[in-house]
Length: 175
Image 1 (cartoon, rainbow, N blue to C red):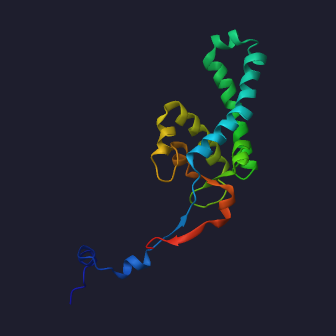
Image 2: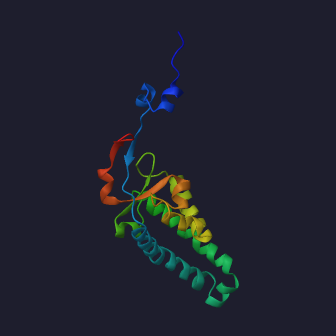
Image 3: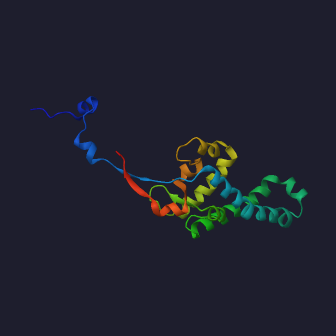
């Protein structure tokens, strides 16, 4: 006698045993809001980037006029140390920069729910600059339910409130 075909059951709305076996538990992640992430980014900008940028303008180039003649070079000299410093902070402090620490945020790997790898953190910070320059990647977080920007999506990371990291629960996908 012929074996009953599974796609007929699915088409008629009957559940098969295969669907019960393949049910995957997904974690319920409390994503951080866009306003608090913007506050953390502005804090990092003023605490980390601005001192580096002033150092580049007045020590490396000597004056604002000399730096304005070589704008692209001045931004490059400021952005590279900023990316390295931000990556070091995030790697050494469990995915937290000074702005994230002040606002109670943490960056985690979306698959493992732990601190991201060094490469993932560096790639996320590099993609953040790309996201801001293109504006699409930054605005993308306002239209997604999980509030992840392009840099988070590309590096498989997300930003969560730090106090809620311990309260992550796994929920059944079917419930």
